[in-house]
Structure formats: structure tokens, C-alpha cells
Image (cartoon, rainbow, N blue to C red; front, side, top):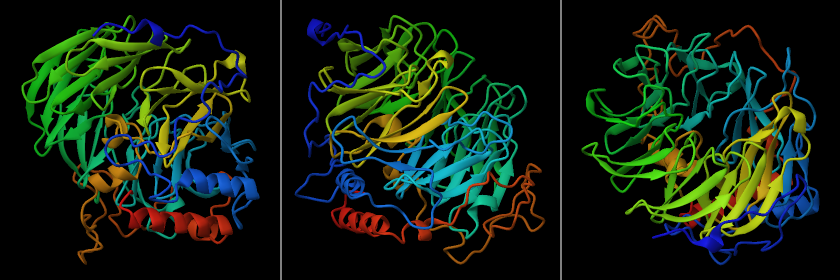
Length: 515
């Protein structure tokens, strides 16, 4: 199918512009797999947030960092976190990592040697987790274990079930982080954390989620992007210009596909096909079983973002300042949208496509490529080239972080729909995820839940010599302690009317099977 000319958008926008061409995208639109909620079925978090904002509800006993807005419609800000400067020493004081949203909590990596955990309803701080370094990779939250890779540092895990999560590291493991090497965002699945780097060997590590022990590693090709785990296979790409398929249990190489040049694009998988971008200006579709090329698409510029798939369409951006919609079967272009600056990885929810840009803009499109609304960040310094993380949608709210490298914001924005992200990137836990992946990737019971106690070695050392405290949550003595912001815990945060309303909504959601 050729390009639809009327789907190409060329209008110029100002930094303050928000299109009202279609203020909503239709409440109750289902993304096609039952994830979206309808008004008749459940109380959506979007409506709860609107109600809380309109009533001016504040969460008691929590740091007063978040700011709550008035009642909203599609493209309006519901709350903002970070308007009061983060207390980083030394600066900068900002957010860099794509967001993870699980169990009513937004996990935001910062330059302040902490991950900030934000109540998704109120926008108030619920907790902080000490990271020892800037964190610009999305954390993973599965089985209440928060796993993350701080810049140039070890892979670390904290247990959210511990009373003092901010300082209770259960293990840290050397997976290649160094002064010259950043580790990828981890992908956690069924008790294993998978992560890569570009400065090995080894270039890939599979790590036991409970102990931090390295289960296997891979030495052959330079990697660096976040892996994706599907049907017992791990697919990964990186600077070596190869797409690699490995056995998830053993690490054995199954096949390798040459993608021409360096890849800054994590792969995604849908219906037996792996999709990955390359700096050679192409999006590749590769058979997941054999590694054979199915088709390639010329994106007019380097594909430096992760493609994502929903309802038979793969969405991908390139450095041509364009978001493309491509037919998954033929590789033909369906439509394109001019984002005016480099687009980030999009997400699909409730029959809408959401894409952010390197210029800190956010677009909502319908699935024909028509713009419904546009948000532009105005509180950062234009001269410092502000940018925005890839969006994630949960219950009709878009969550993004913005930064100009010196200061930043986390924002909850009304999506104008009632759905959650249903595209392959989010649903497979790549570079940020929501509760659907957390549930898919979780084991039925944690070792401690099954009465087995800690699975760590008695001497507290992992098999590779890394320090690990098992699941007992003993104090890891990070030595740096605090960013000056109180962390009273989620219980205190929920002691308000906003918290009660949130849990009421969640109970309704769970009763309808929509979580």
C-alpha cells in the first residue's frame, strides 16, 4: 500500500501550541485486545485523576513536590513533579530515564543518585531509592523487585516489599558498567534479569533476580540495547550492527542477522517477526525462528528508536523528523507524520498513537495519522535543547519525563482516551513498562513467599564475586544517603482521600479483569 498523501502533516507549531482539532480521541475506545476500559465497565484512573484535580485533593504526609492541575481534557497536564528543584549535589537536577508505571507508582530515574517513586494519582513523592549514580535507563519492576542499571555502574536490585526500600539493596552485580560503558535497561522475565552492554566481552548477562548471580553471559557480538524476551528466546541488537537471537535459558546463539550498521534501536517482536532499526536508515523485519529477512523499509534517516507494533501496524520514527506507520505484512508505508524534530519511540493506547520528540513535544494521533492534540514543554530552557522520554499510557493518562540537561519535570497528561498502552514495546517490558508486563513476567511466588528464605549464598557473595544480600533486605550501606526529600512510604501517601479513591478505582479495575 502506498502512502496516503492526506496523512502527511506539515504545519508549523510554536512551543506553546496545543491543537484542539479533536480534544478527545473517544472515551472507551478499545485498543483491540481488551486492555482499554470503558465507562460502563470500570472507573478509569483518568477520571479519578480528573476528579482529584478538580477537587484539589492533596496527599497528606508526603513531600510537597508534585503540583496538581484543574479538571482536564485531552492534552492537558494533570500534575507535574519536579517544579521544586531536586536537591542534587552536585547538579544537574533532572530526570533522564523512560518511566515505568506499576501498581499506582511512577518510577523516574534522576541525576540525583536516586530513583524517585511518585504516586501516579496525586503526583506526590511516595519513596526514593538510592542508586549510587545517575540513572538514564528505565527501571524494571517485577514481583516488587526494582531492577535498574545506573550509568557506568553495576546492575542493582531493591525489594519494594522491604520497609526501607530507599537503602535496602538486595544485590548488585557487575554486568559491564564502567566509566566508558553504560549498561542497557534490564528486561526481567520469570526470575531472570537480562541486560547488555557495548564494551565487553561479555556483551550480555542473564542474572538471577533473587540472588544477583550471573546465570550465563554472551561474548560474540557487541550489543548495548535493551533485550526482548519472547517464547524462550532473547533478541538483542547494538553497536556491532547485528541482531542476535539467543536461547533464554542457556545463552546459546541461535542465529545472527546483519543489519548493516550500528543499531541504537532495541528490537521488538510481534506474531513471529522481529523488528529492529539501524543507522543505515532502514527498519528490518526478520523471521523470529530462522533469522531470515522478511522485508526492509527505507525510513529516510537513521532509525534510533525502538519500533513498536499494534493491530498489524509497526510504528517507527527516524532522524528524518518523521513517524512512519508501516504494514507488518508487506513493509509498505501506510502513512507518515512530520514531528518537526526527532521522534522518540511511540506507544499505542485506546485507538490512538502517542509520540514524543527530542524537542520535548508530545503528539496524539489517530490511527490514520491525523493529529488530535499536541503538548509542548515550556518550563525548560530552549537554548539547552529540551527533550522528552518515550510516553507510556496507563488508564487514560500519558506519563513522560522532560529535561534540558539541567532541570526536568515528570508530567501526567490527559490522553483523551480511557485505554492503556497495548503496543509490543510496552507489553514486552522494553525500556519501561506498566502492570501488564509486570504480571506477565512475574513468577507465581517469590522464593521468600514460598517459605524458602533467601536464595543468596551464605557469605553474601554471588557466584561472580558480586555483593548480594539475597531477599533479606539487609542494609547495603551505600554511604550517600539522601537527597533531602522525605520518603514516608506508600501507606502514608494513601492515607488521604486521593489514596482511598485510587484504591477504590483499582479494586473496581481488578474486579473487571482489566489490570
